[in-house]
Length: 204
Image (tube, rainbow, N blue to C red; front, side, top):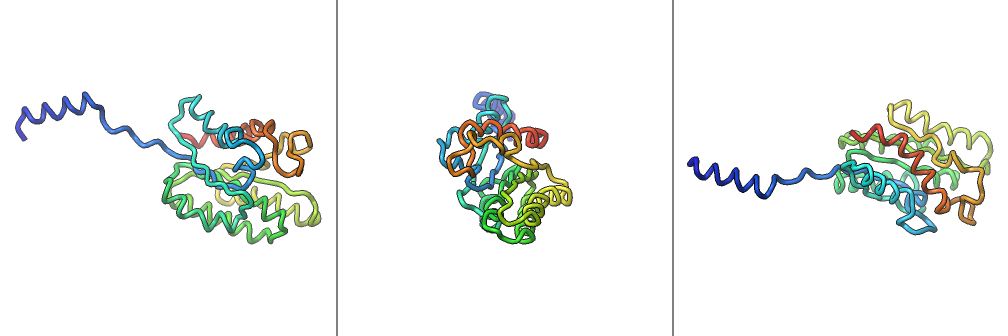
């Protein structure tokens, strides 16, 4: 290539800039807790996370693939296309609560979550597992097994973990909607702080 042409191409690249690097994404795969059930989408903890990333000038975007009523089995079925579409650097798994509310086998939930962790890692993503607890409606044995499942998975796969998303306000009825299941708008920043503490070290 003639030197003059090389010089011209260099000048054009300098003038117009090289193509910008694609932003890395954080995929949120969750249920109604992450889909802002009963409140404005813009006030849910996932939207607040997006605002936090922008405020701190971290080069990540948030892809919220949460669906109200989702179980771990439903999330496992939807994960592959979500990974293909968003190619996330980090996957946040906030699933299992509906398994517990429906009394589904804890072993089944663990298999589903384990499969999602493995699949996410195979796709090159780091994983944050978000734990949940349930009321003792199905007895202390079931509730105990359910609660322990998230920690056991995090230990087995050495993933980041939020042990209980509602730790800061589970005993405060005024921070829930009238159904006493879904967090109200005032509780969303508290959930964000729980997630942020575990998520921030993964953003590298």
